[in-house]
Amino acid sequence: MASFDFVVGTFATPYLFTLRFTPASSTSNESSLKILKQHEGLGSHSWLHLSSPGTTGTQNLYATAWTEPSSLAAYAVHTPTDIKLLNTVATKSRSGYVCASGTHAYSAGGATGEVFALDFKSGAFTSSSESTEHSNDTSSTDIQPVQLLDFVDTSGQRDNGSTMDFGGLRHGAHSADLSPDGRNCIWTYSIGASKEHMKLAEKKISPRKHDGPRHVWPHPNGKFVYCLQEHSSVADVFEVVKSCNGSVRLVHKQGVRIIPQGLPVNEFWADEVRTSLSNGENPKYLYASTRGLKEGRKGFMAVYKLTPEGLIDGADIVPEDHDTAIEWRDDDQGGLLCMYETATSGGWANAVQPGPTIGDVEYIAMTDSEVGYVFVLAWDGTEIREVARTNLNEGTDTSKGKHGAATAVWLST
Image 1 (cartoon, rainbow, N blue to C red):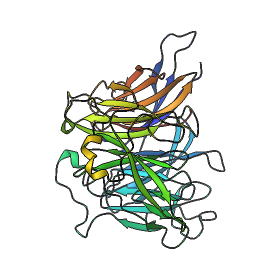
Image 2 (cartoon, helix red, strand yellow):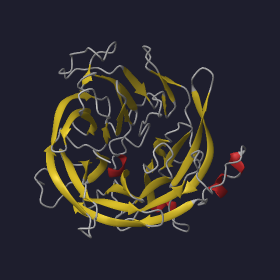
Image 3 (spheres, helix red, strand yellow):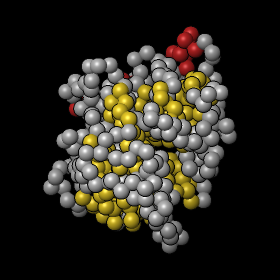
């Protein structure tokens, strides 16, 4: 039976882990998940982004690094067990999220964010803002961003001192993901090749007062964006409306609750939203996860059915005058296929990442920072089952602290 590998970062230790998942087969009734290798990393890597294979066939892994000072790290993934650091760049404030195109990496760090140029051949950070195809300057520790972004007022990054504040990451921008055509991201920015690399097109306020947009994910067709609201545990669907000049605005179309009815939202903080991989450019499902705010309050993962266009099948469409109906929409669970209770609260994680599909079963990696578990879940269109788990703290070097699993990226699907 074929095996599938993925990489996991942690919140509190300078390690990356390669895990190998082997699904059940005719010769083995049980799936397995094992730690293939523990790699020395730059620092605590809370978020990972894996690029498509470059000209050499090597993939690049970009990671936030909770170092002093704060930074991003670029790695070359030669094989699942051979991951090498290429170089690093400093960020103005602690980064909570990084994504990349073939030419640039984008960081979101609460009050500020950065755009860094990437070397065409190696994928390393480079100081060249004019041409990433022929740049050889990838070794300097003083590489400057192509663009620095400000997401809050002049007061700068705020940190209320609590563990939940993550050094100020809960104020300002939390994530950045590119649209499928690579031209836009939320807040929303247009992305071009001009000196002003990113230009603000729209600042989209949450549909609910006192809510907190956390992560977004685009539909592959580029027509819709899914936004996970951290405070209300609602997944919102926005239509991407493009203007004649290439800029976009987001129109709120749907909002669905991702925790069971009757449970108070103030006991949860939502974490992740992703579309399924099992149907290529027309994903069948939307996955959204929540964390329990305190240890003992288990989290949830909700699965919603998507229409071929990208709306949630069965959920109500937001009226144009949505202010009068917003409270009513918060309890909408039309289109809900399954609500899965997670094994722990998830700690800071409960992040989900869809992986390989075998037959009619889609496998999903889920990370837990409370205990250090990494799970593989199986979704067959009817129910979610845990099919394998491992603990990053068992049988590995814990001399530099407890491993709290953060996020996962699949090397093979």
